[in-house]
Image 1 (cartoon, rainbow, N blue to C red):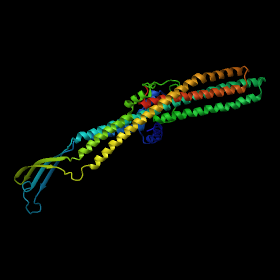
Image 2 (cartoon, rainbow, N blue to C red):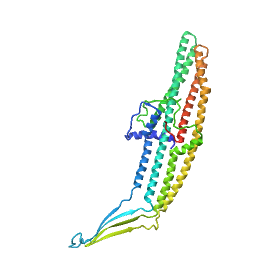
Image 3 (cartoon, rainbow, N blue to C red):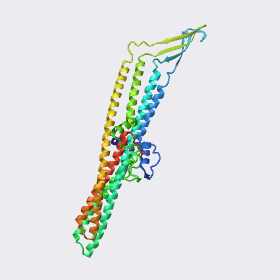
Length: 426
């Protein structure tokens, strides 16, 4: 399941789950770290809980697969002359049989059935871990999207506050006759754009928090929470993401739970095929007991052997063989998909890292310096208003691009770690 699909399903299912009165678990803390957010998401998200239930269902099937068949006890009575006028004593005038029968499983059928069921448990457990991996990646992306929105909001508020200072300065200048009313009006009109940036940033913060709270299955998606962190912080992943792709793929071959699920399905299908072949040989039922016929007492013994003349489980064998081939094909497709995911995630990480370094070294300082110098010059009357406004716009645009680049670089780090199979922070 893709992470976008997981996020969408979590958002859609949350109100339905709440409407049914599902337990909410512990309340959300007012301040959330990334580690705390991922823990709460894994514990509370209903889709992950459903995946855990699937594991429990498979474990129940495995318990049933280990059980021996129940024996059968039979009690029969025959030839009692019920319709005679004088049938005589009940136990002395009829044939009574009590017997015990038990079905013997042939071809090591119990062990084979248990092996197939245990393979299903291993497959579902790996699938559950893969759902957890994807959920963690979604929470990490949502968490840093909140940090991105908050950084853009702080930037917009800072520029708006600075603009208000300039307006106050120009109003004083206008009252003193140093500038025209046109220049004062121009900066006041320009304030609308900076104020609109604040409104847009506030909306982004609220929507980003709501998306994260949906992943945490919060009872109120509009709850006020503080996200603890900084967009500039480099996350600790517990695994190196700077190794060559070939080495990263080697890590993934042992860490990726979806690959383990595909391998477990191959083993399960092989065990299931062996079990289906064993079914072609019928079980044998043996039995024995006690028989009384009037005054005579005797023992009874019998063996029942089905004759596999027509049904030798041909259909089950053919199906299990097809399942084995299908599992092999899906495992090969999973390996190819993982290799592509690692390559694409590695490319994104490299490019985004270079992008951040380029903006930081080539653009950020220049834009910040130009804004400060132009602001100081304008306060002293040494720069026209248009130069100041142009510098502010360039600084705003540069900082927005830099914040987005930081977010993309952090997201690509998480994406590469998840592609390897290491989805949680340490």
